[in-house]
Image 1 (tube, rainbow, N blue to C red):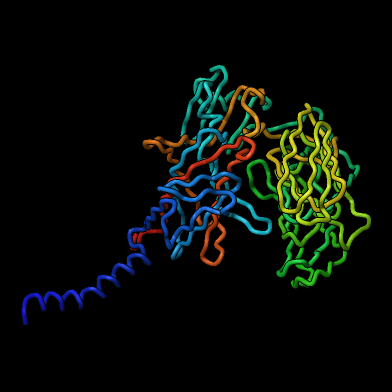
Image 2 (cartoon, rainbow, N blue to C red):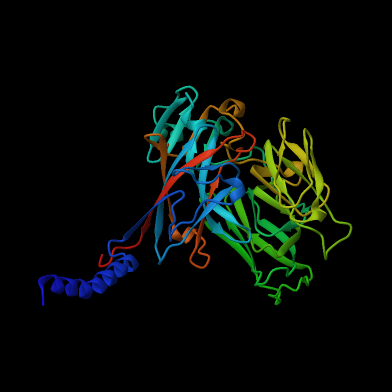
Length: 469
């Protein structure tokens, strides 16, 4: 037997062992870190191409443009991990804010958004200081450090925030509680969040709702109250109506009481957690100040009342988006300073308000989703805004008339012609849909600005506890 023959036999024997060892390493990840590099246009078992096709260009020479919002991609982890870090290589010249979100909730679909690039901050000539991931911009340098800023904070109307809270208590001078109950007679579909104010009184809400049974699965209702530190302080629950099918047979009108006494003065956040099958038909409360956060879904009245009710809302935000899901929801939304015609289902329409102060918006009838970065009330007297103005893509710092910006933001670094941003997510915050994670680029204003974001590659590090440690 020749030497070459022996070597060939040895290779034949060892090859399966080497392959098996490599596969075991891929699966068990003994180092605790699994790395994937993906250049757009390349095939990968772990990361899909950007889509949908009508919102992105074709990938050419390792470059692909996002031309409409939102664009997304899917990641396929091959085993369980605890965290993932993404390194995105991109170019952006015109979009004020670019973020990447991980799908964090279904029914309704929600994303945990983290910043990639903020031109409003990076191109500002204001005084800038950073500490431990927190950034402070000052129109005129008043504070010598971020610690000084919090030691003697300015008034709230002087501050804008971006992806961070403002841990300065909000109090209403001259506020007095009342025992007079008021109603919010609007059909609200599914998950909602709102803030209310409490001082020397018991927090009390009565929710009347129906389970419409349009989707399969149980529809549990959970109402949770959080204090200013984000701690849960009260909860009310209701189980499914007993019909978990999609037979579209609505339940009767159910009632759920939420009561919490002995609460300290302050702003409380209430989370109405449930599925899109649940329609809150009315809310009653003696609380005087109630503002909904970011999104409201005005539900239809099918199976409840005829003719269908609409709604009137009040807000100080200058920009909203609206859509309907059915042809019956086609209508015109009319604000004090502007209006928008919703003439096609499943298309988002912008409403840009130009007035000052609190403006009203008339919604003739339901089946309308409203998305904004501001607050929404269903009565002018209920409106209040306990938070600093959010920094958004639809206003410059000068237009916002603030003197400070507080942000949780790190500018991307420059690598040749590319900007490179690093962000990380805990796996517990990502929806795992049969072994698939969804990530979405948020590029607000991209169509109005006729802009684009060019993506080159995305590197991913998957983390687990190293074996034996």
